[in-house]
Length: 285
Image 1 (cartoon, helix red, strand yellow):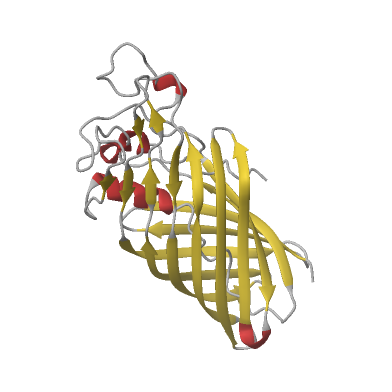
Image 2 (cartoon, helix red, strand yellow):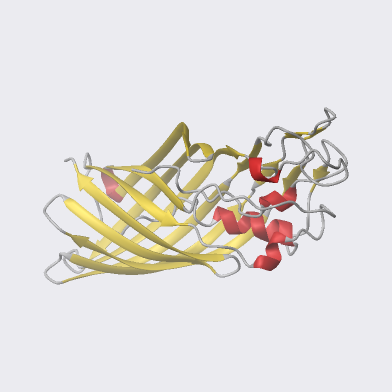
């Protein structure tokens, strides 16, 4: 699986770099371009519900993965309006985000989920992300309906040349962005905690399940520049925001074989972005 191809890591956080005050801390307001851009790139990474609600038996294990195309932000968001007066060229690290997923059934309708991406470099990105979730599911009407409530969280770090990639470097004028010969080593920490609830219905003799739901999410993304210019000046400017977002999603899960499940979901954060999530699971037991 292409694990990291997935983080088109902040196409415009390139515009979040060039502070003249090295090591400055910036906390832009929630409606600023900087805050909205950070929230935009949280959307594909959040550890949302992967498939239609289903009450798993205790000891059941499912191993799977998902892939999420990373959309492009509104061009206006690529121009900072609060933290920085200058901009630099944007960089595109990847256009698809992917990760493995493991789900284990517990007693009393509970299930735990987890995902881990180690320090793996793919293309121009290096990511170390961990996610976990706890779900409670209740079945009704001979298991044809299922209602699930879920709490999840994601933390970690994605590194790459976001602010000053190789193509943007220049040594002609120290007053122009990216004055240096070494690409920047910037980082983006996509921190989030969310609550979701969904209702699912099984049709087609139980082999297809349709579902829809929504929830709320607390976002605390953190960005830190890491660029050393030709004069030895180091920019370690940080950008931090705290945001609350409403979420909604709808999708379908089909059982291809007794142990193979494939899901497709439309996931939206109305204030930020809409993504398509495609996943597959294999029931080990």
